[in-house]
Image (cartoon, rainbow, N blue to C red; front, side, top):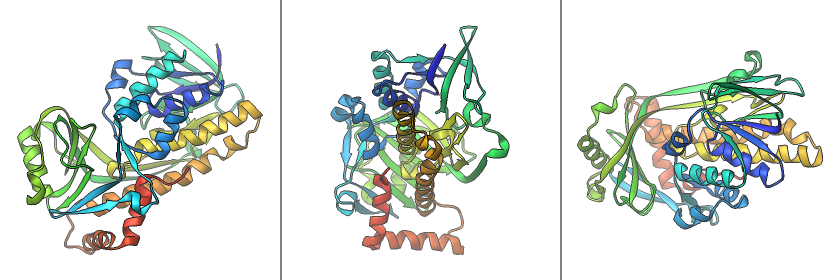
Length: 390
């Protein structure tokens, strides 16, 4: 069987790419290692840039997002219990962000692809890529014990950090950059009312905390924990008490406890692989880069990759113009590094590294104090948080 584009991975980037191609008449097949139930249950980010929202509206998969998503004009930054407001809308000429969970976005995209006859092969095992340097690449996989092979024109690897896509790139052509942070985020999903009308990023002597939300009845909260901590170290009571402490006495009373239905610890790292293409293989999303979640860039960065890649593939199939494909990696990487810088900056500025009495520790605190006291500093934060233009 031949298909123009094979997409590895049914996360938001793979699904979005498939639908963007579909509306221009370009067929694709998505191969996903996990089950549909697993994919639709994964807990991920919940802050969408307007660029990402715009792509969802472009493909017409925006009805539920428009109805349930919550527009936020800004964020709060709390330092040692004192809260400051960053009015992003005012600082950026009207730009905002939308709160809408990645889990819900994924459900919407899967439903749309299937409703439009999209081909998604869930539980596709042992995926391997062949001939990526030729003009006739192919993808092999196993489904229900039977081996299958797809020939194609191009392969888009949207299969995450541990996926087969990046592993297939020649080692002598790939350069990677990485920073691993000495802490993680303990996050909970709970049935409770949000702490405030917008997200609160808290920097405290005991560590970072974030009060976020998925809706008016479901919250997503985090506290910074040492890398070696385990879930069993943190009872629900300990988490709520620690969150209150890091928000400070004025905001502690705003925390609403509720039934915790998901709890996990995520390590923090920054990672970039260059280039993002080789031959007929193209990387997008976490397959090529990871950002710490402090800047809310992970999903949005994947969406920007898909924007560039979809336009390049459409130009090739509709106009026989290969320039976009040749420039894809360069365009995507330029935006990736800007998002990496912002995510590293936010992480460094708001977290505790255990060296607060050192030169580096004092500089980080001075940076935070400057940003919160300067219109220029606030504008820099706001412009990056709402998302740089594609």
